[in-house]
Amino acid sequence: MDKITLCGIECRAIIGTLPAERLHRQQLVIDVELQLDLAEAGRSDRLEYSVDYSQVEREIIEIAETGNFFLLERLATAIGNKILHHSQVDACCVRIFKAAASKAGKGVAVEMNFARR
Image (cartoon, rainbow, N blue to C red):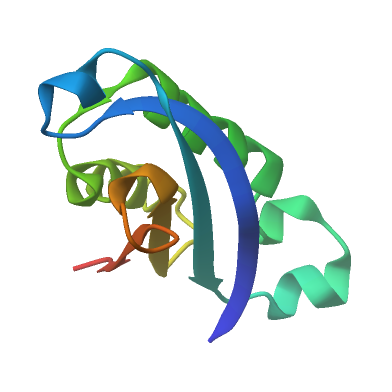
């Protein structure tokens, strides 16, 4: 399967289970991998046979920045479900990195996979 990968989408979101985490937006970095057939896009050079990844990026940022989530897993699920609304996308992988989630390490990342059923 062909892939389009959006790397390092930075946004700020209300996310976390601790009371202090609910007060201020936290920095997140989101990567998504879209799986789709890109053969016709490659032959025709026409966007309708691919996916408008700038639109996908805007949708990801909107979900993260306007939402109010406790878990990274819930945010990843909201993003994955939205991406699958694009009819060209067969499956996707969403990875969210939250630096503030770890005191001893560099951060925590959640990675989840979604596919059409």
